[in-house]
Length: 233
Image 1 (tube, rainbow, N blue to C red):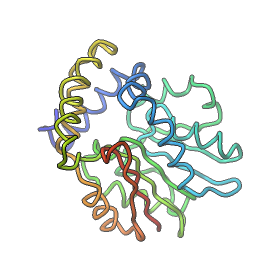
Image 2 (image 1 turned 120 degrees about the vertical axis):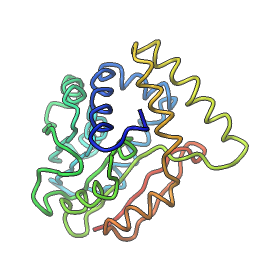
Image 3 (image 1 turned 180 degrees about the vertical axis):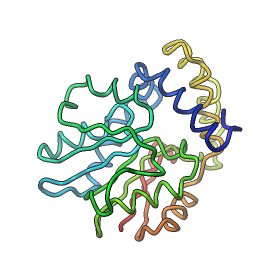
């Protein structure tokens, strides 16, 4: 649960994602009304990949961002990194994932040389990192000078008339539906808890800047409950 810290939290999150790996994509579609597909398309567009680009997707899960990248850039070299092996196993069987290279790794200690990639992406993973600034420092390290780091993530809902409805959906509806579909209600109880303690877009922007990224900006989506952040090395 979210009161866990450090290695205990990392171990819990790893086990949780392993248990829901076969139902993860279905729940993403349901929770976002299918909009997550368009968001990933925008993430790849913002990466500004050129010919024969090298793209790393951190906390790749089942590889959806990389599959979209290969649709837009069939010649790209795509590498997915995640510390939950079961998620990547589920991703390997998906259409369009045949050329993706998979790597089991901790996002805080990426096993790649400096300046390896033209862009680094992540989708719905940053809130699970036990040290977010260190994760972004690693992403900055492995990207080439001038390359981009792009983060798609749920944001703390703004204080407006829609906030109570958003919180009700994530705190009540999501655990119920997630329990029915995956049989793992506790996993989908973790999700709203992690959102409730998560950051505003400005707070995440500040972390990326402290990690050494420049020109950090973000775009709000889905009534300001999701944001895409972009930073440059």
